[in-house]
Length: 321
Image (tube, rainbow, N blue to C red):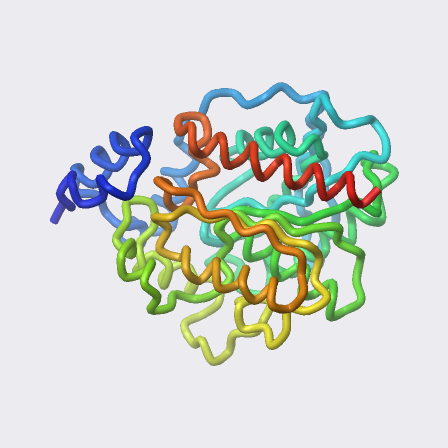
């Protein structure tokens, strides 16, 4: 049954209200009901305005533990040709969808906002490739970028990791693995509404678990497609919130929308980072829900969020000098 237009009115930014009405009034199917291929087609079919012009956009990649991994490198006009700061970026999509093409606009927005090189990683997707494939490729990308920093034109002492949604979870997991395995140094982690846990019964999940952008059922479905349906087998890389300790991790920026069903879990992870002594900026944006960074072309508040996060990222990289 369609959700009444008024149900979410008080939660949503005016720029989003028309989108919410259109989605909820159309008798939408959940992603699970539509299936993986339909979810992928829907995401790839979204037409977004062209993003900021870059100094250069270069397709590269590396031989990872599961085969070739494409990486698209965005160098903004503000970044120097050599020794630039860089963010290794993992796109969202619930571990089952998303590509370099569908996340091209967000990569450009992040490059412009931060002044850093963005290396966007096209990791393999579930259900064809289940855990730990994407996590292995995320970590391998970090090693690759460090080893080829001079070739790419980035400063190996100023390489951060970041991502949105599922990609934020991969970024968080990569910092844990780098710490545990004494791996390459990470200057900072930038987490937009990261998927760090399976669905939990939290107030935000109860209030927004049937939101037009992400439902509780879809969270379960996508998590199961990648991790499997037995939570007892989870580890800290697949679900970073299960990590026993978050000490000795790189400085963090954690951004989430008020109307996101995973808001409380994201903020609980940010609180744990702070309690562990990790310098952490936690940002909650009113009027927006899950995936808001991808809505920057049409939602002013999302553009503000990307800009504000970008300033914090640039400041952290500058402090690293």
